[in-house]
Length: 295
Image: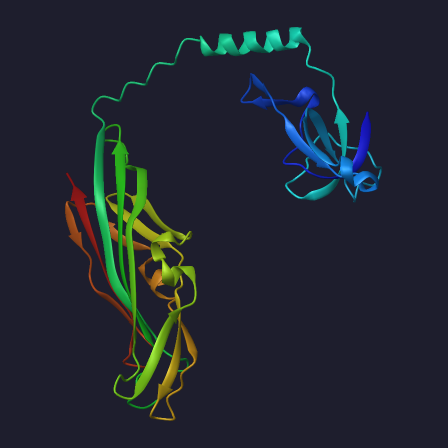
């Protein structure tokens, strides 16, 4: 028995409704297929049946159903076949295969290398970026948004013997704080600051924020991924020359803190690194790292 219609299918199902898990285990699946007979609305019903679902590809040149085709979660035109029951001897063979796999001798846990060494470190970077209008306007009135950062990460290094180089075993971002504030003159402006993206609202949950650590001899090279918070400034100022309604982006801080080299010591405090706007005294970014070995 076979019919063609519109149905919702999660995935293609092999003959007899069997799915392969891993390399040896098979399980039987059911798919709930709903159809509606327009000519006989009173007989419309939902039935749970064992089926094989084939996607009828609209761009297939020869109309042949490919074994690799699968129906994605969407309304598509499909062909549904009612299938015969699974033979008992096949079920018995599959059950025997699964049972033998479960009774196999477990693999022994590897013994740690004698004399191996492990070190854990906490790394912190504090700094800020002043996002100013571009080109930076002349005059004493400062406008823009300041972004203050505090990023904390933790990583672990291992080596089997002192003669071997260190390798990074694990790394993670522990904390990522961001605060932003107006650089407009508070006595002349009434402003509202609003986040415009995820990096601004919840920096710690930004998918591109990552602690990356590379070992180079007795030093590490640190990177923190990519993040660019945006803040929209709206409001009014008594000085008509001061422009509002501008979106400010912090897009240089993550570039400046990337590639920093720090020595693998019990405690290392890096220098305060400052970048200024070209041809100006205004500070663009400022930051400093701290590396501390954990007990």
